[in-house]
Image (tube, each protein chain N blue to C red):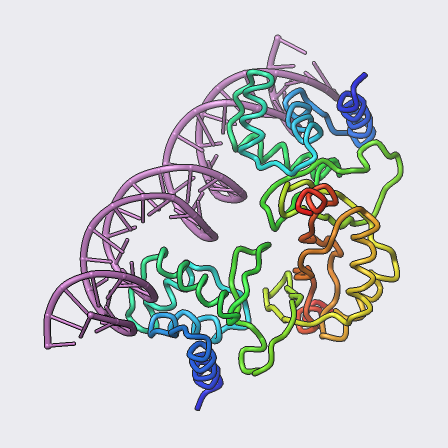
Length: 153
Length: 153
DNA sequence: CGAAATAATGATATGCTGTATCATTCTTGG
DNA sequence: CCAAGAATGATACAGCATATCATTATTTCG
């Protein structure tokens, strides 16, 4: 069974456990994100579903599906790119906190990481010192991946 | 002389020093950003120039002007909001590094800060450990400002 | 000075992202 | 089976952004 199929099965179970349904179209959109190591836009997912499944979803439906998938913690939105990416912990059974995202500015590959607690604490202290309160430590970090760096060298 | 006027005069000098010209329309757009403690979109700046100066700038021109102002380090773009904000160091003579931005998710006020070196180092270590290289430490941090927090309490 | 080059701005069209709204279809529980 | 709710479709539109070509200002230099 493919990596994608495994993730979808797992997602289906966890939806069911929460009393939600992972319909066919939701699976198709989710698979579009699972296929890719880059973030994809709603409209790219429209194209993906068309090409891959012959399913012509209206954009509005894809946005609704993406909202659903985010509510189910299966998908994250990258605000700086206006794109979406499958959660890296989609196969985990335990809940996990807010992640950070490394985005390669050359090949666009995205990696979801968890920055260590002490760094987050440091961040929080800086935020507090400025008279603010950290609402969410979801950071979208502009970076270059190793492959691209080596390719450049 | 108003705070805004001082900043514009300073900006004009520093442009001149770099061989660039801060034209009238560029001053108008910049003043729209200096007026505000929130980030503004290009189209909001179109409206601002119309209301404030009777100047009907086409959006394309505002985008070009914003590009210019960014090149001159007078303005920052917040990618997560698709909006622009005047640089907090616009009156400083010395160069400064990449900033971070605290964005209140209630009143939208923005504060530009510089996170301490050790936190940046911690961030960088985490990025390296994940097989990436930090390209820019410009972070856009989802937060709540003190006023909004107190208002809520 | 005056023409040529360069910089700045205008006009128009278009593409992408996202939401509002109302209609329709599908599923499910009583 | 039917009523209620969930999911999806259709259409329109708003906001952000860029491509492209035209025009106007400004500068440079013989």
